[in-house]
Length: 89
Image (cartoon, rainbow, N blue to C red; front, top):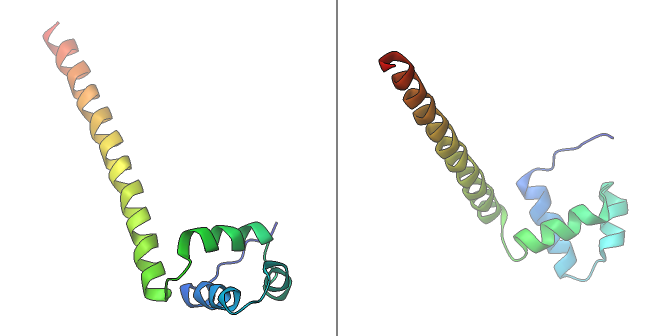
């Protein structure tokens, strides 16, 4: 399946068209999108402009990266403890 990237401006434009009365079915055909993609965009970004969408996406990425750093820090600390126990034992 071919995955296309849409710019934040394009996402905002699709959502604005929804706000003026176009249907999700019309927009999915026009842009070659799955209807579920538009439903997802609408639930996440309704009423936002492209800058607000960008901020929202960056905040989400930041949360994921913080979680990843936390997991890796825990693993590192656990491995350090194992190494200390094997050296002293």
